[in-house]
Image 1 (cartoon, rainbow, N blue to C red):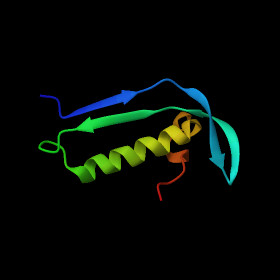
Image 2 (image 1 turned 180 degrees about the horizontal axis):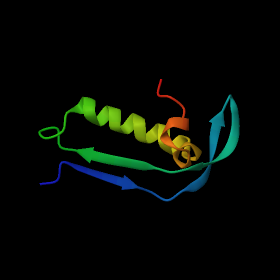
Image 3 (image 1 turned 90 degrees about the horizontal axis):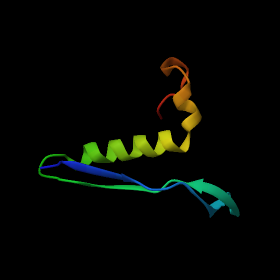
Image 4 (image 1 turned 60 degrees about the vertical axis):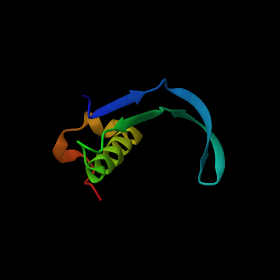
Length: 72
């Protein structure tokens, strides 16, 4: 049994709305499926929000932990 499967797609340039304007953005699709008999939905929510935040600001990953932006 596998409690979680995460899928990461190919980065592609796509039109994206930014501040009410259409801009070309590099988009990385990702998704997953989780077995709720093993993993609680709240844990998955925290994981997904953290992953999205880090993927949206990859330059933060290169900084030492103490220099990264604090979680809100």
